[in-house]
Length: 612
Image (tube, rainbow, N blue to C red; front, side, top):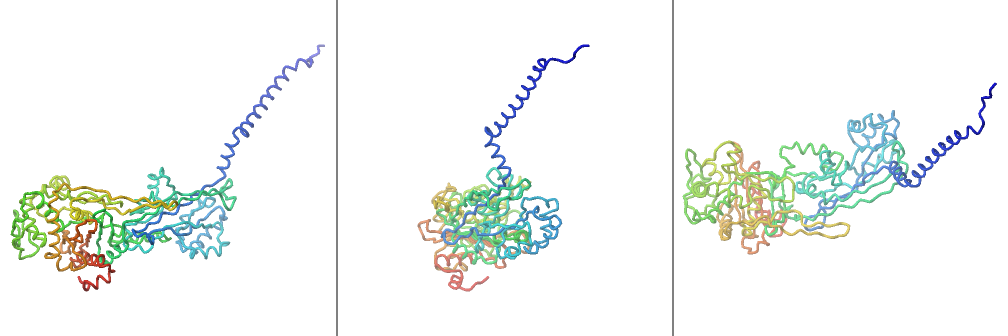
């Protein structure tokens, strides 16, 4: 019988092979452990730390906004509170009971909270913002009974604070939470889902300066998002820069009171620099209304107002300039050489053009007038005649554009509109109709399709005051870094230099002075505090039976040889006012207040009772 047992030496190669495999595997594991723990240890440690940290943006305080006097800020930041709920910290069966009690404590609509915290989010540990922008007076009852509100947290944040800005609401604008559409555009500029951005006005125009740089708070959390420490590491925010405006709060208040509760606007401009000293639009809005818990309802109420309070009428509304356009027509007479300014034209009761009759504003006519007298008396027939028979629409359009009409002024505010200087090509393209003589007649007195903004007319007066040069109107005077105190001041920028002959400006200034001393404004512009040059205008809107728009464009002092010492005042009152002469009346009060150093009430007493 054979022996089937193998000698021990026969198994050695197999054992050796298995041992080598085991040794190789162990060595590989050890090498991998060495790689993970020693070579790449820091990398994975940092990754692990990142996975266990929650980062939260710490909003930067927005920069302050001052008027040119730089004393009390028009807009600043104040402390407020944000209340959040962490649903995962509340037992699921208690959340439906907690939400109504929380809405009652915060004076919120229960349906809003139910919408913010739907059942699908009941188990999450990420905080949900319930309300923001509330004062401690509203928060304190909640804080005193904190044990009754598990999962509810609050933190102090910085929010926008507007202090008695009055009619500057349309200039300053307001801020709000960033929308998804805005975030798509601004994400690469450092904005996040919780950013607050300027929505209108200067807040929007200079958001990149005002917003500062948000800080970051790092909080350790566990695998399901629960915070593990009460205080985390924080990178502090950098405050936004402060803006100093060209606006003079005293002038702004005076203009606001002079306009009163009449729908319209006032522009006060420094023609030698383009600095806007006052910019009033009525009705306006209080940007502080959008800072509290009722911001949404406040916004909806204003948006539904048929008077359009969000519309900045100085730069976003257009009107026919009416007889104020006769200033530009007079410049064409003086500068183009086709009409002798001394030539007498009979401004009778009517001007016949084909089968149409154009009437004088005085039913008896104004008699024989030259250019200066026609401007003073606002003689329609004179300007119909020279517009249709001598100048023609091409020259009229060219002069209108030389004065800056038909294009934005470039003011540092968003939403400015261009207006319209019409002509044959425009009418054919827009209305599919040929230009006719009646269109030229209407344009000659600032009616028809011609559309301008009050700020454009302020620039037109500035051109006359400066002798042909116009500076870009602007509201930003300088920027201050709140950390270093360094200030960057902005120099005036020439918007355009007119190519019109320099010889036209002195006679045109004299003719505008005649409007005040012996023309249509003589009965209304009565102040003796300063000599004014200007032009009235009464604009029709084509609506049957309606009142007319009231205009007054002007500058003063008329006899001041240095344009740097002059100011331009333009007032426009929409047809909703029953008395059509309030624009020159308001300007009269403004000039009296500025040059006599009086308040509105003192100016009113100085020039007589309020009438109209």
